[in-house]
Image (cartoon, rainbow, N blue to C red; front, top):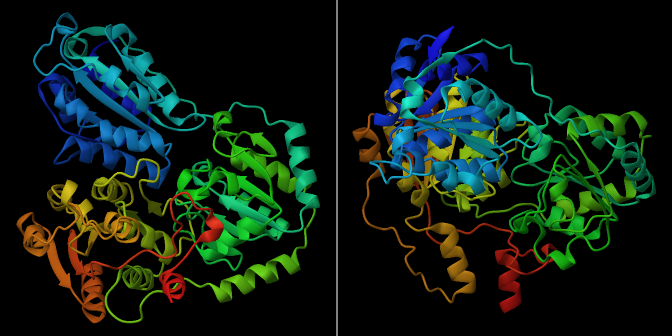
Length: 561
């Protein structure tokens, strides 16, 4: 049957099972929006306040569900406003398809009004991108875009469609979309056997879990593997929830703001078994001194990650779920009682601690965990509050912490929370934000209010750019250059002005009360939670130092005394 390009786009989205898209209309994409209007009973469109909000919402939708997130934008600035969100998804391996519309084919390359070479702009931050100049190629291109976004290591794909292509007609044949295989890479028998040989020789093994374990859906296989290995488990920021954070073998996050237990334990282990982690600089600290006593086995779906940041002893390339399944079938029960007793002693000696008086980020995260009974989707912005959310909320299931790990995007959280809440209407979604981050995309509160989404925005308001100030305090002689935000912005009034409910808390008792009220309030709620400007994230590893030198404020006091 003959369909216009715009009709083909909508039919292809329906083929892929897309039920929600996030976007912002404009002249070049009007034909597509006209078709969306006709199919509003099949595809829900969420109008955000800004295209960047749409890209982050598509990201949050994808991270919380495992499905491909979809965002739409018009040409020129509409398309470029997606760039930060696309880059965020790229760095964290999030499946996303961004569809933009450009000026007509005859106007391309002529500096036409609102023309931009968006495929050129996004080439370094997409798995692949396309510009479709012939309507006859459109359906195949969109299908390929979704396939690329899902297969192997997921990531964002951009499809740019000139306006006249959305109006032109072509023959369209419906297609049945087969489920994408996680990986077509055959798992090496020799790599499995090599890994098993090292596992059986280990006396002090440690398991390090990254975002790849979440993406592959390997939680059950990981749980069985840990039980067979009888080894302690740490994770990266992106790996949260892949292994149950309430399990006695769990020791917390690894790296710059990881626990002393994880940092010291990995520094002492003789085997580090790594599941879907890429050895980020924030995890390894001084690379030359990372896990020097250990043989390192790395599981990853992307061969390019092996030996990129840390040289490994052995690797297994493929899907983590399938690899762990094969290892579990062959691995005999291990016993590392003495090593586990040593790690248990470290847990007793080095618990996470914070001040026992006054409202603080750690206190709020513990209270949020308590009041939600651990059954919420936590979203964060980037900074101190992000680390407190990673440290003090116990993630027992995957896809319950959504945060920008690789790019570190301030302004990510609110849009992502909208996407997660739309995708999970029966879940409580909470965005934990710093006041600096909230300012970047706070216009999306209006989106949440328009959609009547019951998400909760907790602003950890210290009136400064907290993480930058922490570095200025510790490493820049307290030169607080451009990090003070004490300018009298009233976030409660701002929330109310955009149609949300606003509360303020300055004490623990006030926070307990207003958070309980927030949980019972329909529609979006903003809590302005005021804390001290000099609160810090502990432990910490200084830049360039090995993770075995993690320190706290008590360590600093003892050193100066």
